[in-house]
Image: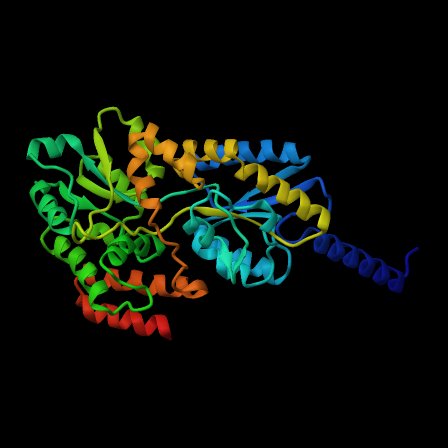
Length: 405
């Protein structure tokens, strides 16, 4: 017969055993085995969430490990990772949006990727993965934004693709007929909205550290003017980039601002004929400056053996063959400059995106770890203006105060 004290001791021992087991695993489900690694990302739709598991399996086999993949909604990923970083229980591998890299690296939870090398990569791509001069993330491929246009509608209207803001405004107005708008973009009160506005902000000479400047005000006034003219739907304040793509495919928009990841879906619609050009500039003398999109691979601190295995997996994923396969399958531009140039020469649909990468800008280049706060303030200002509740200058002045608060 077990006494009360004996039962209490046994219960305590069992509880301690469970705690130790959980501590060894961490809340991300990792194990202490050097042959089983964990990975986390936010891909929840094809082709990314079908291509990535295949590449992880292949690179894991090459490194002699199995990889347990965890998919988390994008809106939840950073909060989860920051909690795990504070507890030193991050997954071995994480694929994170590049503007979040500095915030994550600042926790001290990441392993420097110095030995993996960045020779041949675009300097802007290297910069997007650095924190305090050290490389903590490297992208296998990147993306950006360009202007898609319906070639049939342009031919009917006798138009050529717009190259500057005046031409964009005029084309959007002329192509607006009935239920069809001339242009569509995402102005959601999230990073998607800020990200879509940044090409106009930067090419117009604006600076994310001075949201209330005349240059940023002029760019937002451009967007406001097209909405007020009826050339752009007021619903853009609720549209994600996927929604924008749906509108373009359905013939409800003659042009759209979007990224290369939409190409697999667009190309599947054989009745849709479209072209892609760089984002229109304020004047012909300006150069395109688009935000650098895409995710970077990171490795978290653990045991030396696990870190070595994780680094081997990332090296494989960043290799020429795997990064080229990834970029081709998901509509990204390879981070390697030579590979990107070859892509532009062989795939006309990607030429505009490759052209813009050379002058693309890391979203954290100006602000570092403060970028997410500024981005949110900017997105909310865009919302307020396009919804008609305030003027561009007033909204951006408030956004600047919010960003500094």
